[in-house]
Length: 378
Image (cartoon, rainbow, N blue to C red; front, top):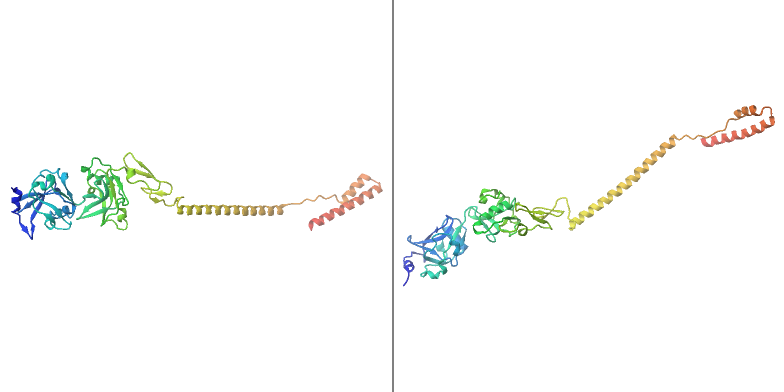
């Protein structure tokens, strides 16, 4: 005997060979819950989660007027929604993701027996609103993407720090046992596609959503390319999640923030860049700079040495010239012949022989003095 669901199948309205139905969300919020189908505006049912995926969820969100993107909830993910139990009307949806309505997708219409959907598990969705967040890898880590004006955009890592990561990860804390947020930069989780929509987030860490922080929309594309896509690790160790580069030493401060202590010649948050006005001796550029420094030092020393020799020579020459000008040569001279004759007369008296001998000697001395004076004048 067929169940009531079989009876309902006979009441379906067919449009162009497909079943016409409307959908609504139940059990959650305006943007998430399990899907309720309504047939002929009267008969309420559910969708089985078998083969239900994000493409199907995106079409359901579009049909509900809740944007163009969504994620699929299956199985136990819907248990948090009250009233999820009910009859199953549809299953095996196979949407491409760009349809306007679930009726445009391939699907199996009515399920006669409930056991045809194992566990009687229903399909649910979460539609995105502006500033909703998704991560490229999982609910705990990945490239950060924000939903804005119907599209997913990436975040530039300009100013991106652990406080910003803390707020981004808070979006997922309902499905995390604990949160330890670490900011990840320079597209560590790969480069995104589309638009880089935000930059310069400045959160203090206590906000409930990134929309409460200050930020810049639509940053300069030359400054913020996808090579600078920001990411988060919501449960990671800061040092292992994004280690310091170029032998930098990683330390965790008391507030949980990571600090890289860079070797000489490197700088940056991760020691990823060569420091300005310094060199790394192990690199070819550092070797070249060291050679230049040594060469300049040798040249300066040689020039200084030769200048010292030249200046010393000039000083000594100047001193010798001054000495030559001021030297007075004193040549001792013997008494004149007249003086000696007077002295001899006084000494020898009337002894003529002694006087003649002495005068002859004096005349020789006088001639010698005259000759010495002539030689000096020459």
